[in-house]
Length: 236
Image 1 (cartoon, one colour):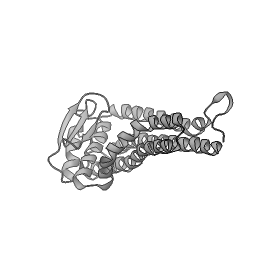
Image 2: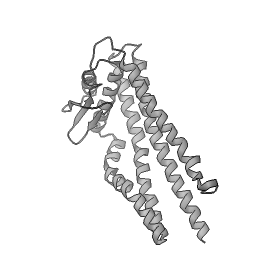
Image 3: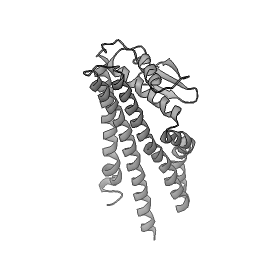
Image 4: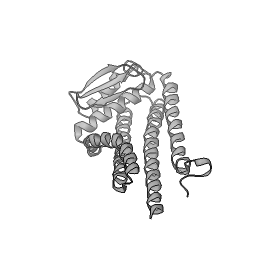
């Protein structure tokens, strides 16, 4: 497959990366539409997102984790540095089925840290490397091209690969947090039998965004390898 097709079109991008980018756009739209849909369904127990997070922590024997409000939509996250679950305005005090799923998921991350779940410890450990890699990859590649130095190009590709590694480690972390959340919701009757599938659909839609992020990063990495691998062969 040629690197450039007609009119200088990057064929590797068209064939490899663009489908993943479109998938990522679709996945983001899917999570937003699913969350919005089930945000209009109130759970029969009248449980708030904050209370659902507390229930997940309590069920798993985790204490000392604070639950706080944070502004924004779908800005929910667990901060391991301060041991705080931060829930957005659409989740914290909401009694919607969607908010229960999201809050329980974030509490699932707190449980992972509390029990020493290996993948999340690995993700935390490689964050500095992946941040460096994402910043250094393109400058290294460009510098390698300018200086015609294959070593710098290879290092640049490897640096980009660190961000792909981060996405690879993140996916099982997110899936496991959702599994813990749904298990607690079901076993503790936080939602009814009719409401549970709605929370599950919300978290499944969210998981697709991580699948899309990994697919896009892998496609970009493969594109770089093919481009510069082909260039090395052509230079011989």
